Image (cartoon, rainbow, N blue to C red; front, side, top):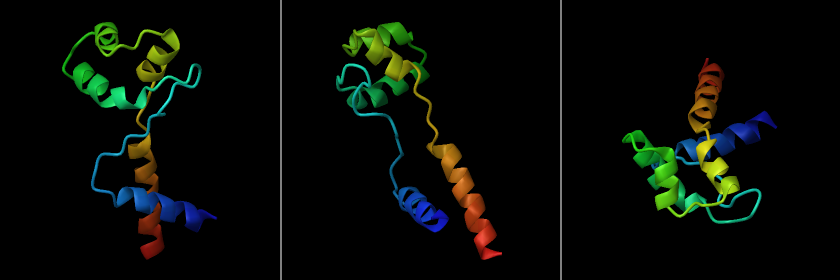
Length: 91
C-alpha cells in the first residue's frame, strides 16, 4: 500500500509545473473558485488587502471567501516525506 502511495506522489513530483491543490468548487455552495486561486495568491504576495482582492475577483459569498482565505499549500510538505522515503529505499 505504501508503494502505491509513493508512486502516486512520485508522479506528482515529476510534473514540471507548480502544484496547486485547491478545491475546484466551494464545499458549501458549489461555486467555482479554483480558477481564482492563482490571481488571489499572487496579489496577496504583492501586499494587496485580501478583502479587496476577493471583491475584485467577484468572490462575494463568505463560504467561498473562506475557501480561498483558509487554504494552505501542503504539497511541499508531502513531497518532503516522499523524498525522505526515497532516500531510505536507496540505502
